[in-house]
Image 1 (tube, one colour):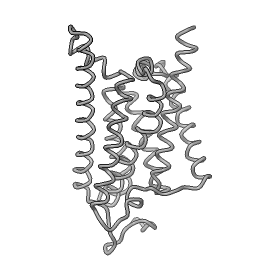
Image 2 (cartoon, one colour):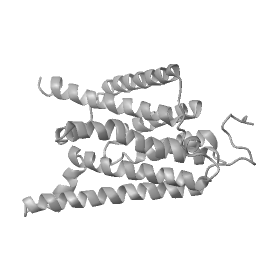
Image 3 (cartoon, helix red, strand yellow):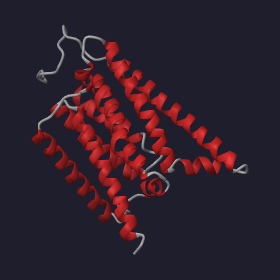
Length: 258
């Protein structure tokens, strides 16, 4: 039988929302994300159509999915709203403090460096495997995103800060905690959060890349379980996105121009 950890609630102590409540609240957050993204897309279409009366809606929608400027603006709008909503749902549970609920716990410098080193090892290993399989190390999606970003600073803010904050607070914070203390347990929390998180990237990447994202999600889940810290997984996620952005820059600078 699995032993009780320091932050495992007993029957008499406050506990997170149950599995179904956790999934329901998480679905609400994701619904808000998609609604705000859709409304932002409508605004982009209206603005663009005003300048181009003959604009084709279908072609515009297809191009928007990899439009860096749209993604930057959308993330800047959706991330703060979804983080606030996630914090609200954690606070509504009562008893547990939001910091404990969502894993806002500091880690030591040694822990931080150790896990960030593991991220770099993981990224190096996946790049080598991708190259060995004769697949492009840099997918077309992030390249298209960078080319259409318009404002690089805004794209960096969205990719390196806002997206990791929103996604980790929801998946490795709120959702992870609710699943972990349900009958499914810690292993299920690691697997389910990684799976849902990776599936949400399906429209942006192919199956191979989605599987890679899933494995990285498992690594983040293990880090969350080992340290109890979502701060750590935010840092891991941010480093992953930073390395991806640097790879795009190197690709555009040395590969496409060669």
